[in-house]
Image 1: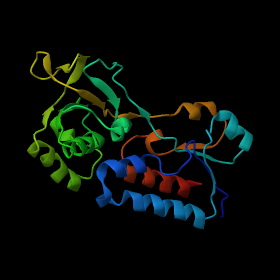
Image 2: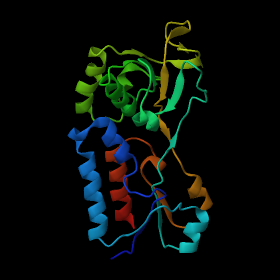
Image 3: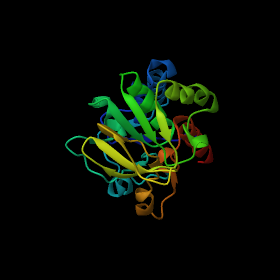
Length: 239
C-alpha cells in the first residue's frame, strides 16, 4: 500500500540533532552524510516537506491525517540554576557557540556528556564530569564498542568523574556538589554544561486524543540516533 506522507518541521532546515551531533563528534562518524542521505530519500520517495512550521494540535487537526507520527524530539532537562558573574550555566546545545574559561564542569553521564567532554578537551579545557549515576552507566547511549575507547580517553586527558553526584549550588567561579564522599565538594568552575538525560515529550500526544498517533525517537524514549531511526522504521511497518 502506498502512503502519502507529509513531514512538518518547525525549523527552517532538516536534520534536527544530527547537525549538532556532527559538529561535536566531528566528521569521522559520517553524520553529515547520513543527514544528506535521509534528505535525498525524502525527495526520492515523494515526501512533501513543510519547514518553518510548528505542528501544534490545531495544525495537525486541520490537516486531518489518517495517521500521525510524532517525532518532535525530547525535552532538555535543566539544573534550574542561573549563571553568576564568574560561572556560566550553559545548555548543551549552546556549547558550539563557544565556552569561555578553562575549568569546565559537565553535568550528566550519558553519551552526550562524554562527547561534549571530548569536544572541550580538544579545545584545551580541563573538564570535570558530575554524573548522577554509577560508573558502569558512563557513556550510556553509545555503542559498547565506542565506549571502550571514549571512556578511557576522557580519563587519560585528565577528567575526573564524580559518580552519583548532584549539584548543590553554582558560585562565583566555583561549583558545589554532593557525592559519595558524604560531604559537599567545591571545585573551581568557569562554566557548567547541562548535559543531563533528555526527557520524553508527549504533550502533543495528549492533545490529539481520538486520532491514530504514534510517538517515536526522543519524543517517546530518549536514547540515541540509531534507536530513533529503528523506532521510525518499526512504526512505519505497523501502518
